[in-house]
Image 1 (cartoon, rainbow, N blue to C red):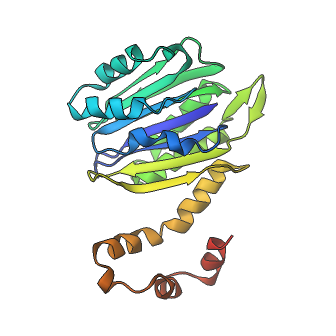
Image 2 (tube, rainbow, N blue to C red; image 1 turned 90 degrees about the horizontal axis):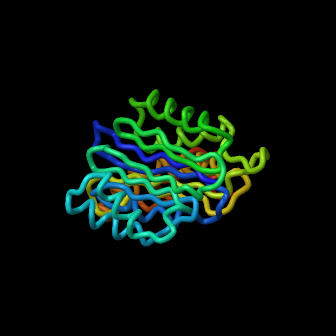
Length: 241
């Protein structure tokens, strides 16, 4: 019961992932995106052990198909999983095991890999694909969140013809550094995709301030002073909810 988009921005060379699912605290399964070498993701019975192995193979310069083949061969329960890999140049590959439940599939194109399981149908992934392609002038983090929103609006997850709500969601975006430029998570919420959008919108003005404070804290105002100068009263109140 998960839909995911892995994307790359050819202008900035950023790579990232956004995921929405019925499972709770599923952002902990996105460690395979915390690398400058590419993205590895497992779902429909996530396997965190794929992340370090996949990243080691990507660092060696292997193709997405080669990395994926190794991950599948190394997994005695691959038939119960979806596994995706995208290299630094935007080339993707997806494995959907024969025992993955519900409607499951993938869309792969230049600089994106979109896949999901226990969905209302292929149209969910088609909507995500269209959204990601149409927003190419937007920052990657925005494109990834919009793709999730489009998947939700197209019907999202369903079990036995009954809609299943998204209870956790997350987005990770990497530059060529060893740490994420964006790493936002919703671990348990009745409308997790909406909550991810809310958190992103609130955090967005803070991000450059936090980066400046990381580089040279001596030249930065205190956080409270910065907030007084840069945020409205409504924004401040929203951060306290």
